[in-house]
Length: 299
Image 1 (cartoon, rainbow, N blue to C red):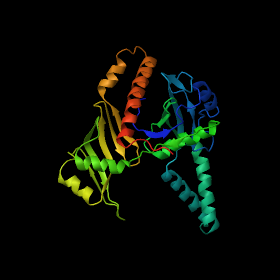
Image 2: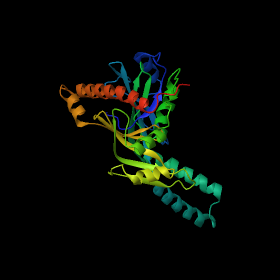
Image 3: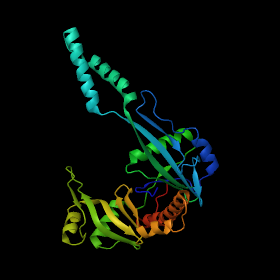
């Protein structure tokens, strides 16, 4: 359950919604496995497996969107289409036209999809209704949008906005690399990627390297800007900050996880301890990061 990525959004602070109201509205879109020719199914499931669609603890809420995709490789479809094209060509003496070929492919997909293998996945959402945080553990904005789209179908109102900071993450990361100093509470780690602004967008990446010295500064002087930078906050949380203000490779240091496990006697206790510790750390980390980027930009 420990989040590995953060797609960061904002809700009104405080959000005028109770956990009970949210659960009632989420019940409008429960997860149902794919049926017939459905390629994908999405819906809400209990994040802790106890039947509750909203797991509430210490003022924080956890949701889980369950996703099921039916795996139908293009190679399988193409092989069956070729087989039928050959048979049809032999029967009618000429190959199918463009429209007939498209209809043939659609028919093959319809026939094969119900027999394909369902692949489950899921996305966790952390909501802090008091502070107004809405965080999706997703590696890309497109995956987070799947969550948001399904929520909009279920909720009467959903006043969500994307987080924006006063300072551009790229320009601030460039300043930190150029000076060799991270903002208070943060340290610069050993991975980064820089991209040029010219038409061909030249890119250079460093892994497990000391990000100091003339080479990095030369790239910055040539107009390249950081698009990724590995950092650590408070010696407790490591992460990669991107130019789009997405957090990737989020990792909580082992000491924190050991702390969560000390008093847990059951699986449910462990889940609660992990969630409490994670949300506690993130509730301090996010304001610190926003402060390092000049504060939040309010509309």
